[in-house]
Image 1 (cartoon, rainbow, N blue to C red):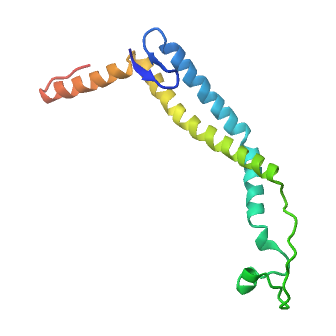
Image 2 (image 1 turned 180 degrees about the vertical axis):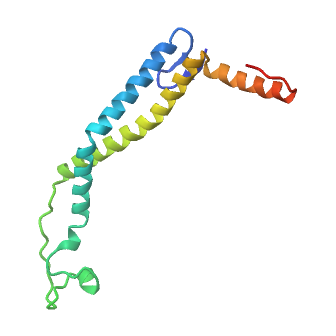
Image 3 (image 1 turned 90 degrees about the horizontal axis):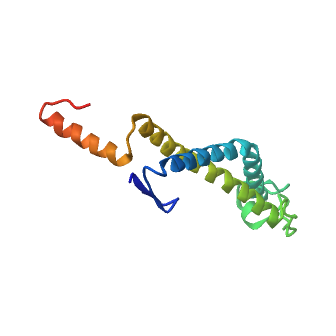
Length: 151
């Protein structure tokens, strides 16, 4: 046994380490692909939500600072009770938020899973498992304390 993988709900060991590594590698590549191909969608969705958030401040005739912003008075002193139509519907805002969520999730999972994949590639190149790596490190420290060198 190497370790227990909660994603696979199985112990990773001699007979299935190849499948675990393939799973990590292809999931990393999939996340990187989604992050790169969805970058422009993410930027458009983020900018659209920012425009919607700041659209109240961009009403013509309403000062950006001062009490006029708080009570909705025009510069001439008359009250403005007309509400402009929202630039985006609820569905459009949810689509924008979903795109942002997808990009952030795939980017962070891609980085974390990429680090795990690189770590297991290093272990495979050395012919070790995670547990053997830990045991070998402790053994090197123990032998170094005695003044001996291990390989």
